[in-house]
Length: 371
Image 1 (cartoon, helix red, strand yellow):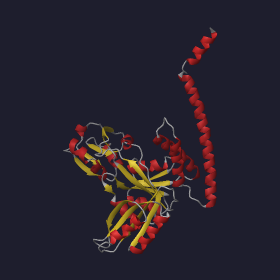
Image 2 (spheres, rainbow, N blue to C red):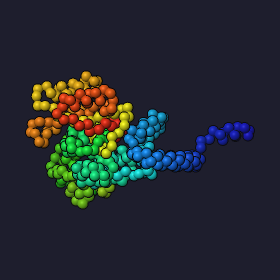
Image 3 (cartoon, rainbow, N blue to C red):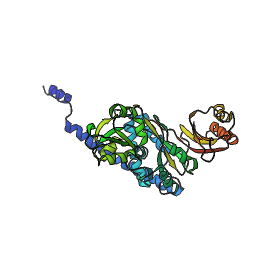
Image 4 (cartoon, rainbow, N blue to C red):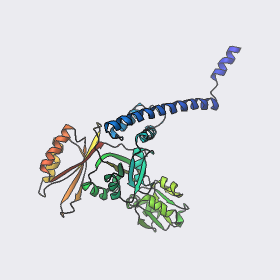
């Protein structure tokens, strides 16, 4: 009889209290391990300081995160594992030095969200009034890094960023592919009260179809940033803003509709600008700009140098030369690192043929984030 009772008791599921006690034990183990990791990170920071090395090393951080994703067996999704380790790395890095990161402000813009995606929360965020100010902050040493948008999957390249890349002494050290999910927000959440819709010009363009179908009689106005639009809408009941959900929460707005972008996979590519080039990661991209003579076949000859060396061109973009009307600079994104033998050979050959060549940076290729 006692044997049967024992087997029945053993088969009973654990109680909530038992499971919570086990979770508490695991939490303590996690805390001890994170503290141990932080101590080791501090020791590495001391060695970096003594050796004159930079604190932020994107190649190493990417290797750590990709290894954790490769080892992930669930139930947490890979994106959750990535976010957890970005924040652990960010907090440990801050023990060595909390980087100052400039971005187009105010807070809660998509640039701010992209910066948080890359650097985590344990950095000194420095919102700026313009793209030029972001570059200036890093160039003058007032910020360690800058984050700027360069391309949107719906609306194409950001011309202001491309123009600033022409003359800057900074280098591209990373890219961020951030999903852009627009919401239309207002103080009361009542679409009937909306007379005017404000947002950044790119966001207005990315939601053109939705606005035509749902707010055909409303005036639209472009402002400096989505976060500024949210700020304005919080003060005027007849204004609605197109911005992120985070911006809406920050300014106490209510959601009229979410995910209103015309293309569901809408993604913006951001560049991370810094003072020092990055090492090879094994999965890199190189961005360069060049100019060629104004003659038949000159551009084709330049581009053929990459084909001969089996280098894939993932993007090419032209921008007018400001000092020479009807002549152009060409921006190219090339797969590989500038120190890879084939790409180094192609760039050297292009330098001989081009009127002008500038390698803007080699950096780990970005990975699309989950929506």
